[in-house]
Every structure is written in structure tokens, then in C-alpha cells.
Image 1 (cartoon, rainbow, N blue to C red):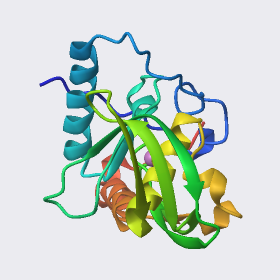
Image 2: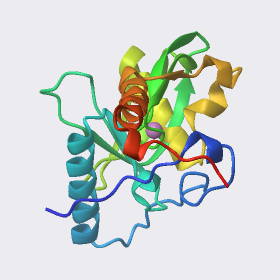
Image 3: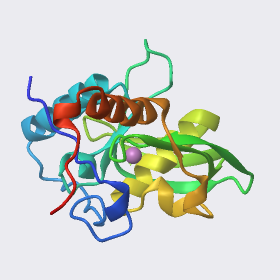
Length: 193
Ligand code: NI
């Protein structure tokens, strides 16, 4: 199975127009070869599972098409495939909640505002039209992934980047790096000369 690498951005460039993550994706064309579509979806599913995420949009793997995967937090759930999605209705009721992004590793926020319910129209993985409503967690994943299709990151939805937190993993990595650096004097950084 082909593994599609996830494009990541460091926070420094999250607000700059970086390729893919900041571009508006185009509709998947009607005339797409079913095999091409299937292989992209399979690659994305594989990448999503490998990364342990709950959603992945095509621009995150460098593909500028309006296509995303989204799933419930349940490890037994399988991802839904949405192609050329449109939100036909979004609840006015907004809830702040936790989000991270595979393209911005090491960070999350608990203050990302999203509609609690969204009604979506899309094509499924075999290009049949579907329409349904999702709530709460899944509605949040849908909105996060949909944003990726428009080049928007969850960090853009925060009132302030102060609402961003480092994951414990990122903090541990940073501490390990420091400890490693100073545990072995021969590798300690030398002052500039
Ligand atoms: Ni994301």
C-alpha cells in the first residue's frame, strides 16, 4: 500500500502562504479515473491510521482536491470519505473544544469554536451523492477538515495564538533534547566565536 506523507508546517510558517496547506483546493473532477480515486483514498486511509488521527484532508498529503476523511474517536470506527463536500446548514450554537492537527504537530487548543451540528452534502467514495447531519465531535472533525480544503488551519479560528498549548509529547521531546545536550558535556553547544 502506498503511504502518502503528511505535509507539516511549523508554527512559524502557519500564518504564511505555504504550499498546499494554504491553498484553496479544487473540486474532484467528474471524469476522475475510479482507480486513481481509489488509490488516493487508500493512501490517505493508511496515512490517517499510521498517524493515529481522526481526520485527514487531501491538501495535507499534497493533493489539491476537495476530499477528506473523517471518523469518530472510536478506534474501531472506519473513516468516512467526503468528496466535494458542502455544508448546507450549520447550527448557530457554537462550542469551544479541543483540536490538534496532523499538519501542526506538537500543539493543540481547547478553545477552537465550531458549530455543534452541520448538515453536509457530498459525494461518497464511489461518487454517489449523499446528504446527512453530524453532531458534536464528528461535526468538529468535519469543520476542521473542510477548512483544510480552503487553506484554513484551526489556529486561524482562535481568538489568540495564546490559546495554543504544546502537547506533553512536544514538551517531553524538548526536555529530552535539553537533557541529552547537557548530560554529555562533549556535545554541549559551544559559544560562537
Ligand atoms: Ni488538520
